[in-house]
Image 1: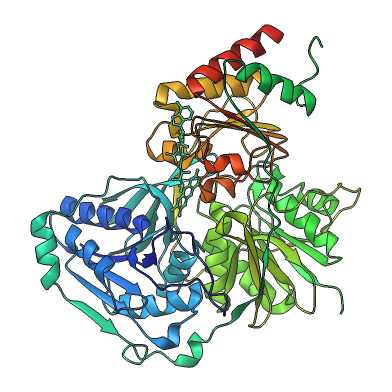
Image 2: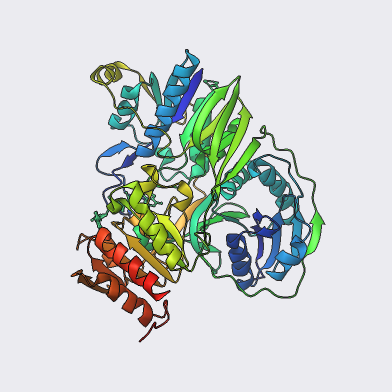
Length: 260
Length: 320
Ligand SMILES: Cc1cc2nc3c(=O)[nH]c(=O)nc-3n(C[C@H](O)[C@H](O)[C@H](O)COP(=O)(O)OP(=O)(O)OC[C@H]3O[C@@H](n4cnc5c(N)ncnc54)[C@H](O)[C@@H]3O)c2cc1C
């Protein structure tokens, strides 16, 4: 069972982001492994454990100056990582990123490719499906549980109303939602092992990709500040909170003016 | 500029189409576009009239796709159709199936996709609006590639118009087999809900981690019922397994725009607020006077949900 997980290093989502002069998300400062990706790594490790054989490897696109985030995914148990890092890819849209990741993954011929439903910084949420189509694989999206039964991936797929049970023959691309499993903590042994695991850094040229096909094809033309809403009334509950909420709801006519 | 040519992917919902699909048709009409609707499913019979009443001139009817995920099939079919018709834009609802369709269409047409759109602006080019940093800024973007622009629009971005007595001309289309294998739907499970659906409710009462435990979510449900609304949730308590995902409000959950939104024990993270900031009146109960939710609320009570909610429930019961 060969499993590839797509992972991404992102600026800490707890820090409020900002844009640079080209309206791109500033990526200075420390980057961390996107928390959303830890679920994918965990699902991948469990699939390999359930199969009793195989390995989990990682692919990523982005600046490779600092790969601490990638190493933390290796520390969970992935055996190797490939990072495509190239100035040519600055400002790449999701389809371009998908083309780059597809070029790496197609060399590996994995049984299953796992990605988060969406990243926590860009949250475009289309990349895994674009990747699947480029690899000519079925996309099983929004999975909240994943199992392999006789060469078929069986997943619960979250929908607006509930969930569907869906099935696709391997190889396939699967996107997992946050919270599907409890990601394991890296053990001390895992952290030590991760230090010696290979992180291959490749460029667009190494992949034999035509730079022309990766050109930026969408742009932000302006950014406007949204007028701030003026703060409403606020008071400390002194036991009359409920009555005052009711009075407020009557005032704005959400409740009819009962009695008064 | 000649009239825009806009296609709208209309997601089926029983014999109807989803509310977001109607919002997109309504916006296309507002942009004075020539509008084409695309839909599929076992109940497309009435959709020429239905999409026509919402402003579509043409209705591309893919018919029943069988028990498979629609993403790649609908995308492959739309890809083959647009190469003849060349719309300026294909508008797609930001739903689970909508996002699958958009991703596949992007790959099949080798065209980028603009996602998380919350508005459209007409100019020399059609611009898409995107909410940034929890709604403090808005970015306007455009497609530099060849037409069509693939645009994925969040629910509740546009008001629905008024349906007219009109019908769209139906074009029967044989679905195109995509070059990827299909995903079969073995079974569908609908989570039981009492009262109105979250995204259509006029009142939404949501609970967060401040409730303390899963059992206390009962207070939220009861309050929602008394106000004739739907119960919602922050992602923290969905991830904790207290309530199913279908209750989640926010960036990665439902977008709601009710008349009244009541946030109980919710801090007001930017990712939560983008899903509910369009509500007309926002009431918040939180014991932390500095909780960010109070920057958005119209009426805030600094207090304990375990005091305020039971009292509120008792008072509402006494009125009914
Ligand atoms: C990519 C990404 C996507 C996300 N998408 C979403 C999304 O769609 N929806 C969403 O909601 N979140 C989303 N989040 C998570 C979000 O950042 C917050 O973590 C989450 O909204 C917090 O939930 P909460 O307010 O319930 O919990 P907390 O932030 O823990 O807040 C609990 C609040 O309860 C108050 N409280 C505690 N006890 C009491 C009491 N007894 N009475 C009254 N008040 C009390 C506290 O003061 C606190 O303000 C996303 C995060 C990321 C990174």
